[in-house]
View (cartoon, rainbow, N blue to C red):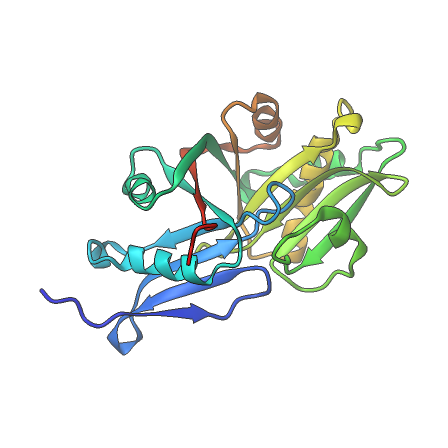
Length: 259
């Protein structure tokens, strides 16, 4: 059967993100691709999300979407997380992605969170430290310190941080992006080296979970990923109620050589 004409178009998104759609006749969406910033982890390296419904696969739509991303992206490198041994992994290898590391994805469901216990964690005093929050749309290359200095507003991201007299000590970020709008992606918690050993990561993560639900009540799940060789971070998330969801491989694609 001959494939109908497909147009790849850019979809308006908040600053710092980008999205494309493959559109068939009558406005049918035959595939989507998006770039989302990864706050505080690798500035300037967004994460690629690409999906083609089963009925539209094997027609080159994914390749056309990736070509649009490569032509229009303004970053030197992008990352993609795919399930091990999946068609997505084969797609990445076929299109020149390089395997970077293996990751575990964990999921927290709000219905499983004991709100009173969570509140006690957030209210626990950490002498010399205070919690700070920021909400808004993430810029293309988010820097935690700059976000905390800027005014909050409506947007797709929530940042919670701990500082000591203005010195950033720990932070965690949640971003609402991609097709699953009921689920947020969490990055962190990250604790700066000279502030470790004070359970600040657990503190800011608990505060983020609480704050996210207050600012985005429609969110009912949080997904977080970490390298398989980061047992301390994985254990800290498990302590807060995160459970293993799946394992993925992280691939990276250099855009330096694009014409």
